[in-house]
Image (cartoon, rainbow, N blue to C red):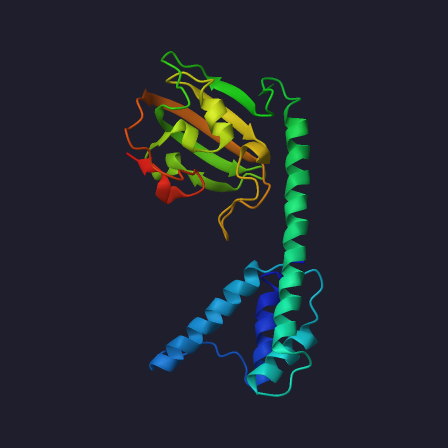
Length: 249
């Protein structure tokens, strides 16, 4: 299970009182450098705990491990064994999450394709026409200028040029396959909604710690503003999941 916001303060309190014999202070004075560093370490550990996922965490064993290590007592397991077991555990958790994302995404797309107005291509890309365009359609080698709003299937926004107020420009064959295929169906001035399976999205190649997890299906609302000729030297590794690689204007 994921450690909830309710459990985190209790958890932190138990760690401090058991390992250090102190209660959590209501506030601290960060006057000396070591005070500030100590606080920063606490914040960093707290953030790590919030993002970690556990199925069954034995709090007593966890606190004992902290106390043994911090007070230089003999630990029940060697340092090498600790590293191996932690890596094995979190690899297992990650694999389960990847499988769940794949299952959830496929189930969503299976239901979504039944909705009126949703068109499914041979590749598995699904799209809805919000507004038809009247301009020209891009080729895969063209530079396109567009606005987009990307969400997960649960509605979580992970990237949006609309919210930034800056349309994006990129060479069409340098982005995920779902975009490369989908935008070629559009004409300038059109607005479509794409439902992209993981095979046409990022698959398992995602940015660590980002909102997009491995094997997630994605939803994009895209407005094609302009089709241009590609520059002589195309940017490398252009990805909608890496904002820094998109040239915005």
